[in-house]
Image (tube, rainbow, N blue to C red):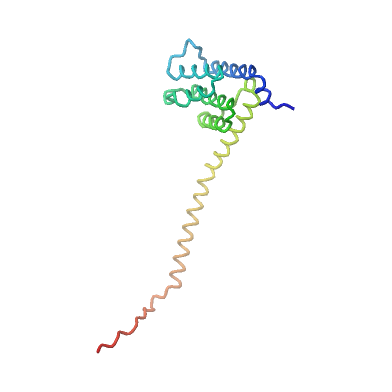
Length: 185
């Protein structure tokens, strides 16, 4: 029985078709055409998309990671960057980096979901894994403030009980006993 990953690996044309379809979808989402690309961010995205379509995964990853000033990019462009990075990493077989890219996207757009009509089952499962990891991280950060509160309460209770024990068992009236002074000749 073949899995989706082996099917795509055995048919490189299918992989290119998939990447081309996702690129077209992203262009449609952002309502950009190659003639409208004006900003540096949009230009770099177009270059990265061309590299992905050509199968130059490492070059596309490098361009997206190091060639962009993400401060000047819009939310839609950041969405494109993260999805393209995830696609390129997934195509290279580096699923951990692909999930990290999608988690970054989920921090920007928490309700993001891949389009099931365009995304392959492999990419959809990758997105589901990233969503699950993002939810676990969110739960950890939500639980920590309540845990922190109980740590402060516990530490305060320990200090108060220690002070009470000291006051109860400390004998104020008992003077310290010193040895007798030596006899002088």
